[in-house]
Image (cartoon, rainbow, N blue to C red):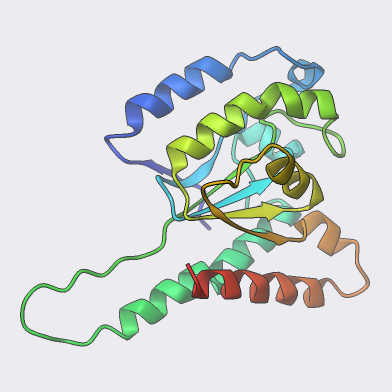
Amino acid sequence: MTIIQRVSPALLPMMQSHICKWEQCCLCPLSENRFKPVFFRGTLPCDVLFIGEAPGDSENMTGIPFHPNAPAGEILERIVEETIKVHNYHINQNIIPCFGHTTIYYLKWAMTNVVVCCSEGSPPETCIKSCLPRLSEFIKMAKPKLLVAVGKVADSTIIKEGLNKQTKMTVIAHPSWMLRQEDPELEIQRAILTLREALDVL
C-alpha cells in the first residue's frame, strides 16, 4: 500500500504554504462536515497526476485521497500497481549494461481531488468553483506530464476550466462507478488498458 507523501525539498516551502492557505477554507458548505482536508498522496512533483472528484468518509478521517483501505482506493491502487509500477519495472529490466553512468528514470505519481472536503455524492458546482483556485495551484506545483481524470466530474471540470492546456490528459472511470457495474473486473481492465496506452506515449 502506498499512502505516504513525498515532496521535493525545492517544492516543500510552496507546499507548506499551499496547505496553510487552504486547510481552514470555509468558502463552501462542504467545509462544515470536514474532519481533515484531503490534499494529496504520492510524490511531488510528479509525472502522472490522478484527479478524482471528492473525498469519501475514509478519506475525510485520514486526510489521504483514495485511501487504499477504502473500496475505491483499493481499486485505484491496483490500477497504479498494474500500470505505472509495471512500467517502472520494465524500464529497470530493459537497462542495457554499459560503461559509464546510466540514469534510470522512474515515473512518479500523485493523487488529489477536485475538492478537498468530503462530499456525499458528487460535489455541487458552487463548491467545485470555490475549490478551483486550490486545484489549479496544486497542478502547477505538481507539474505533471499526464493528468488522469478519474470519473466524469473530474473530466468535465478539467476540460471546462482548461486545466489541461499545458498537459496531456486521459480519462478513466471512477472506481466507485466500477464497483456498481455488473462486471467490475471488466471496467478495471479497461482503465488499466487506457492508462497503459497513455503511458506508452508519455
